[in-house]
Length: 336
Image 1 (cartoon, helix red, strand yellow):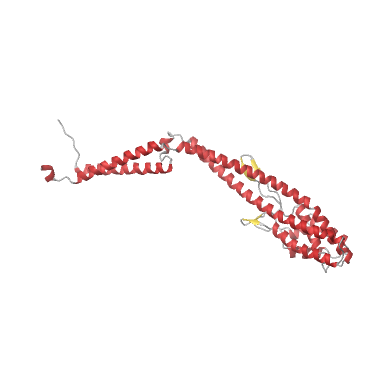
Image 2: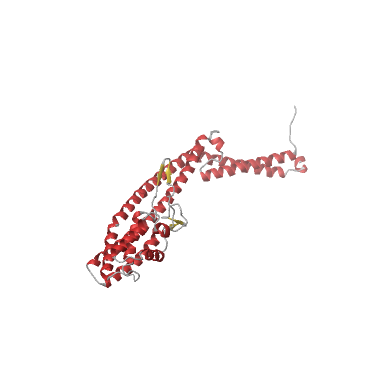
């Protein structure tokens, strides 16, 4: 009978190889037990990666939609806050100025003008609002504040009103300055872009547009009528007291009338906010469903994994015992 045996060096190598293998198995099973997911995708999916690849792709796409929806929600919220400030201040100034025809005298005119200048500064600041370094009301020119300062606007308007002798003249010249295409407002005051930003993508074939710039007609009207109030007491205008009162009163009437335009803008923006919120909820739901499907594909049987881990631990302990005993062999022990 032939006997086969391996030498001591080969036996040591074999024991070390088995030790490395068992440690690798223990590390894998420990990780799987901790994460609840398989570490061997090929075995888990039987070599078919199509489904998991589709899930991963869809999750990446949803992440981009989620980021877009978040950006849109942030922008619309900031725009609503700015418009709320403008509407509130314009309404307050309108109420104060509209009573100029009832309460006559220079005091009411001075009061309207002071309030008008303060309102103009705040309104321009609101429309120059930016989020994350981007101007919200500048269209495509997101790095540029859309409106020049209140002082610049008043100085340019004063130049445009040179020669105005009555309240009617001032109002007509203000209409020309603010409303004429290519006129003073567009060339000297509005500094934003003439195009809107691309729509925010919220899903396949679904998007939302935020088409509102500081050169919108409603914005021009608020600025024009606020400037009208701010210049009611201006010394550069050769108006008599009656014309100054009339200018203050007309600014108030027009500011109150323009409230409807602001309400319309805010209503449209509110509709966009609602769509964004709905899209964000849908994206979150779809993401959760896909993540659950991915988990089901990659999840392990924790009971079976724990059993396998215990078996590997036993094998490793047995191997350590065998290795320890083999290392104590000697010629004396062998011959005795």
